[in-house]
Image 1 (cartoon, rainbow, N blue to C red):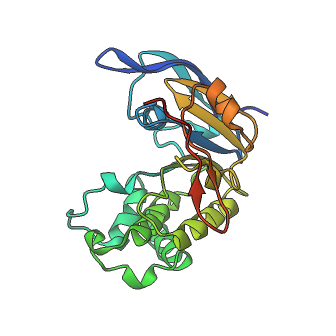
Image 2: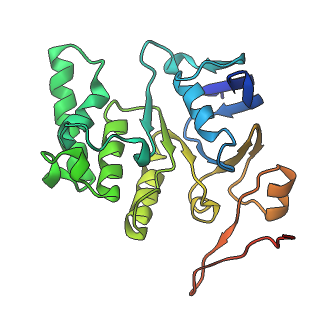
Length: 248
């Protein structure tokens, strides 16, 4: 089976300083890939390269025939903290902006109908006329997920979707992603390996270099071998985190 996206020997830099080096990665149909790694390790930069928002210094990103074209069938849910909440736009218009390149009248009408259906499906139809800045973190994530799904993508990319949401919605979000994964591929950036390991099918550790792990089960020893310094969170009756011992 050919991959939807094949990344070969990719290097991406800012001001000539490499953030990603020699990355090789393949994303297949109905993959559910979790991207983990430290802040500044290159996770968001990798997403930007895939989305065409950041030009690489070297290497190639190959798209399959079904992923090619002027508007690639990729849905993107950005980090909520990067959204301008003061921008004067309603919930419905935010969702509809996911179809900005659909120009024919029939396409516009179909997009409006799908936007209405998605708002109902995500449980936010009642706030369709609210300004985006009036929403809670969970509501905003629902709205931007509707936007990402509006164009019926073959790949859904989410950059830390569990930021600024409560535990209840976090569980609902991941269950929704599990359902969506039956029909499309998903790439998810997260710091919470303990949570996403119940949902993803494979993991890639991103810290300048990318180490692909073809399973959702990964140990602290493997993370150390991948040079991926993140914590593994354990869930029990009393929430707790075991931290590595410090020498200072």
